[in-house]
Length: 316
Image 1 (cartoon, rainbow, N blue to C red):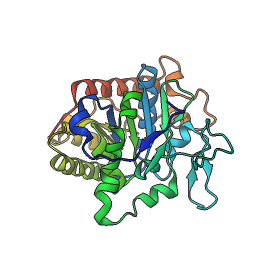
Image 2: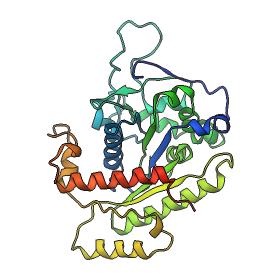
Image 3: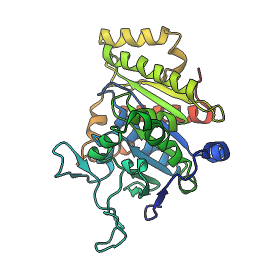
Image 4: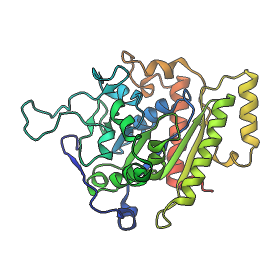
């Protein structure tokens, strides 16, 4: 698939009614507070499902492009001191006269044209990287146009026949925000995962995302199945820290959260941080020793999410 363009012309607007039964499963990893591990969870899930034989597309909607850096050698954008851009696609040939720059990103989904997913070192896993300046440009669309040009566009992309034929699962990493791109990810998703650390601000962010989820549930086209919560995932937990243990206990007692809360607790482990480094050896937490605690926790979390996908997850 990596050498084939996906046409993004969107001449029709109601793919879901006809094709929903064939749509790939789509997981949006969302939290409007930063530092909770969205990118790490997205990467771990992408690796897990691709190793299980699923054809996975990882989509980076965060202008910081952290997920993209985990799989590709991103380049710095000389026109934007804070921006990064995707590398030249491996199948791009200098001198091509088709007008393509040789780079493709998740931002291309929101414009008329073509999208080229990138292959990764992991068989079965392709990535649609971010492009900082262009993703920020997407969010500057006029209020009157945001629904058609941003909110609905990723969904329309993921129900295209080329996408449905190429992938079984899409994973979307989002920015720490509740802006148009995050709404677009929620609109496109069949399932959502909300990671949270056990601290006051991320807990506030968790409840903010649940509010956004409910808004999506109420505004979603009734011809589509509801957006399910695959997991509220506690992350970076420190045993013996009274704040962490107290907030986790509170979540378990909260009737609005308890049924959505993952039973798997991801502890703060250096192995998760090390696996994010470009020079990490091994490159994947799944290549650690069989009894390594980080590997065991990652597998348990992924298996729980897999069961949530097969069972449908939780509704309102």
